[in-house]
Image (cartoon, rainbow, N blue to C red; front, side):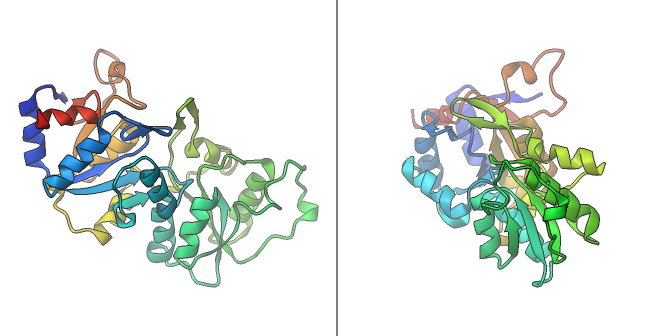
Length: 299
């Protein structure tokens, strides 16, 4: 059963126990473009106490550099090397784990943030934001010449998803020998300030159905994301805590990596999902209403 945090002593104990703090962003630090009350003060508190702070997001629509701009616009201190997105992790996976040859390309279903991270890793790509692929015109194999050098299809959240992109991706996967099927993350939904929208996992669903097979997923809760962080930062998992709003990504990610987990209720997961007869089998170590609750340490 999760420990419910409520007193100043609870929060002081948490602060003392963990030296590295990993944060999801959407639903934890902000909702859309609105900061969660107290989030900035809590991050400042952690830095004041010499805690390592990192931001781990499944949102693949932005590169780390663009994510930094969002932090800046909201008045939140963050450095590019503290930000780990599934777009960055996917690029690192392709270059460092798959070791895809330089003469191969990636077909992208995704947005410019994903393309930027691929470019920074020296990976060639096509699709994505290319105007030729962002069309509502009908698709015909007769009018298309596939690129035989495509060695992977990488699918992230794409708000311009269409039949042309799905058709090209599908054909690369069935025609190009050894073509890898990758997804940045498997989130079924995507939170915005106005409400939920279909997420990256939903965008890739037609391909999974058509292929009858599942892709390699890079983002939370998969360990690939944590491996990416470990490659850049030396930390003790036993002294590390993952703070998130989603049981099946953030909390499972932390648990799979041997980290402590703190669930906040300002995002996807609701109280009914962690209590009562229909509670999820995924149980966080700690629960609090909001990240702002940690300001109790200051009182």
